[in-house]
Length: 349
Ligand code: TXA
Ligand code: MG
Image (cartoon, rainbow, N blue to C red; front, side):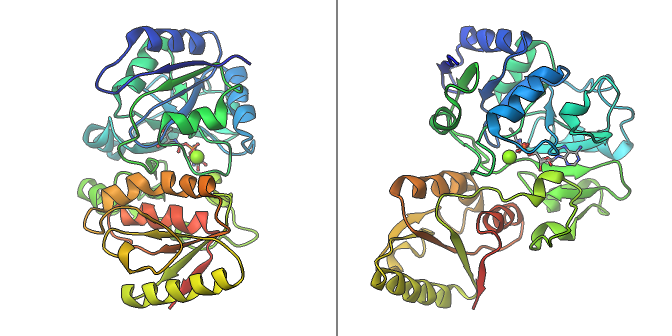
């Protein structure tokens, strides 16, 4: 398939490129596009054949529903009812990195919701994404624009690597400013429950409704018979080519442990990647060291996480060792993604 690529900056939009991609979506095609969280792969959410193309291009399991991206608050045509708390969350956090699960109307095909009676709705905080929805004239169903199982793309070059030849269009903007996906909150249950931590923190959500809580299952290693409420959470995700191991505990001891492990790998002719921070990077004796940023700026750590996991694919290390982070604020999303990329291989010290 010939993939049309349009690259621009968020600050300097090429409306012609967005128009062309809107046309592709209008005609039932699929397009990768930027959002503030990660890049998405979008098609008409109300067209089951467009949605099937998305699953095919990504190699996505059929039981994993897509999020519907909208550019305005008139969602009554898509969902049965919008509870008061959902209205408040939308008012406070749309546009932004929050997806709200609501009961869907029959107009939303079962392909989009993967057989569920509910659907996730989100309004991205990105000019290009919002214009693309406007130009296509339809709500856009979009998972992250990676091949299933890989870390989500946060820049256009990664989208091109994963999807060129598999989709009709790729629309590039700047790098994603949040870097981890949206927070998913189920508003069909009382109290509302967070199914995936993300760009909007639990602390922020609780300011709207203090009874909101995080489904405890999401930070645990899934058991064999685990049926998560967000079907996607049971799959291996965010995985670079090399296995990832997280070393968790006192930071000083973590550094010592990582140095010791690296030496062991080197003695066995293995190359090692280290996920470090600005505060610790100088303290590692060998290995391919990449800093996620300063521990004083957890938003930067989130922003750089997926691109760092992908960078180790380029360097072709045999194993990746990572420091752990606090689970407060955006840290909960960071550790959720890191735990999953490591298949919950956590070494507690
Ligand atoms: O930030 C984001 O949300 C990005 C950008 C592109 O918008 N999208 C994204 O989509 O992360 P995806 O498909 O990679 O992840 C969607 C997650 C999956 O874990 C899926 O199972 C869950 O949302 N999900 C979607 N609809 C659901 C529903 N009705 N009930 C429960 N979980 C749902
Ligand atoms: Mg994804």
